[in-house]
Image 1 (cartoon, protein in one colour):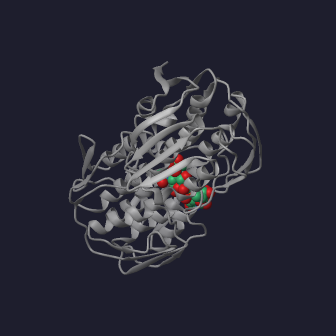
Image 2: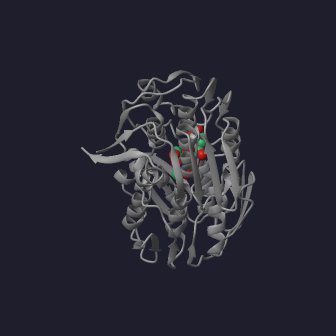
Image 3: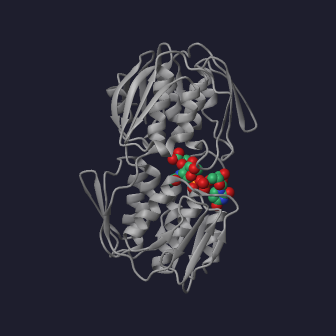
Length: 418
Ligand code: EPZ
């Protein structure tokens, strides 16, 4: 297990490139099972979730070859339709494979997926959507078994705009017979990116980004080369870090449109922001002013994946804030760790009541999940004195070269193996 050793108190200054989006790459890799031709995905971030997704594809019989930061997937030799329990537990996105594997093999078997421990994370919407397309599903001994004669398009209404369920149903529907309509679909930019990717292989998908997605089934998909969008959550994490530490940073390879809810809050905090093409500039020269309330919502609302980082920022603002987590049941596991650093936070039900303090103080904290772990790092960078963040394997799931990028902004952070 590795840990970070951090000396807090310095400003963050400099330019960093934003990685390709983890939450785009994962469903796109799952989608490669749908074609027999080679697919090259460009500039894939070197993170644990991607490595595990590639391991799952290899277990299915796909051939995966890295060329620099590009990955080439050839699924022509794919022959298995069971995803090993150990790998399914590592990765929430393993569940996306249900749609593409059942489309290819007419059957699929997967253990209940794992992923960050941020809530119950049921998959009922995934399974109900697949059933509407003609898949018979049984669940036994912690496994989900899918089988069908053929996939037939249908209308599917999602009880909530689930990102994963929307993507899973899209993957199952692209080669189904006839038309599929997904209503109350998630609108995240990563869904639009998946649509763009699938259409680049010859699929007929439209409406992603709106609440209704229409998919016209096709017989086959081709191969191709694709550059997924940039990671808005990584970008937001660095912007919040600079707002919290004070600084003057430039992010390149971004799309500010996908971050508008965060940018609006950071302006409320008193940060100076400038957008130019694919660059976002943030300058923060004084103690941030508190935002009264942050409510996480499905896109285009404030992203739940930036909730922990934003709460950390609220801890050092002038004034009080209320942060409410509306998507996941237990996404405040990082709060006791921040309190160890002197934060004044009380969690009641789904809301964190934060009283801003002048400075946090360094402490030894433990990461419990990906985004909570990132929040502890940026809190340590802003704190007075030395900190350690343990169990940073959670952070490695979604941030490539996190300590290198932060160091390039002047942060005093180093990784130590223990
Ligand atoms: C995706 O998870 C992301 N993961 C998450 O990012 C992100 O937090 C989440 O979307 C919300 O934006 C990937 O894309 C790999 P959901 P997902 O289905 O698909 C309920 C990160 O840090 N729900 O949109 O699992 C669910 O309980 C990760 O990068 C059901 O009730 O999220 C939750 O309350 C963490 N039944 C809500 O929907 C279902 O069948 C939103 O979940 C599915 C979901």
